[in-house]
Image (tube, rainbow, N blue to C red; front, top):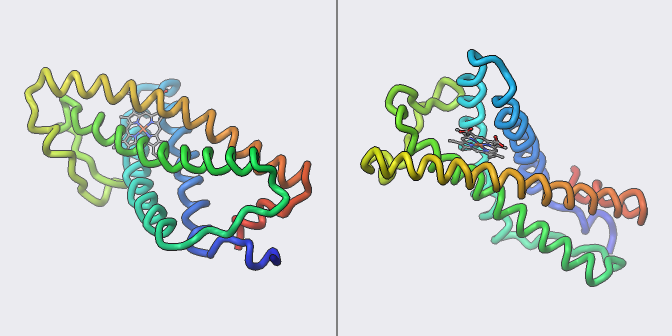
Amino acid sequence: MTLQTQKYASTAVVLHWLIALCIICNVVLGLGANYVPDAWVRPMINLHKSIGITVLGLVLVRIAWRLTHKPPALPENYAPLERLAAHTVHFLLYALILALPLTGWIHDSAFALAAQHPLILFGVIPWFRLGFITDLAPAAKDHIHSLFGMIHTYLGYALYGVFALHILGALKHQFWDKDPEIQRMWF
Ligand code: HEM
């Protein structure tokens, strides 16, 4: 099989790098908000929410694309264990990039001061909270807010680990095995 036929389609490449960029920005914003002056926290978290909701939309498009388009086969020289590792890591990445925005959105919808802080994507597009959560009693909302805040944080930790495996795998194939790995996910 030629390199040409082994590459991902341009739509998959655009979605891959766009989502990767958004997720890196969101990790920097989410973690960074713990270390900046108070006046910066709200604008940083607002941008974080805007990017996160955008990622949710992009991930849904990506999953729909993935279910309707067969990805290029892995190179034949991959060992069976490497194939299993690659498929497992890819599946976990899909699960995490879907679960992170969803848990963030649930956490935010249960925010006691949500009414005073409307969700406006990039300061321009008014967005909705999840009505079945905003309608709950204050005590239930507080519980959901802290529970999903914690789940969101732990999913972040899982993301760092799985993301590291993903990068290490790609670098191993690119530089150790000298396979054109990064070119598969480029135009
Ligand atoms: C690409 C998707 C997302 C990623 C990768 C992500 C990641 C993160 C990370 C790493 C943190 C810092 C956690 C810590 O302090 O260790 C964080 C915090 C936070 N995220 Fe997200 N997030 C995403 C989407 C969202 C969405 C869609 C919302 C809400 C609409 C949201 C709301 C929040 C809030 C409010 C915090 C602060 C939590 C707190 O300290 O109370 N996130 N996020």
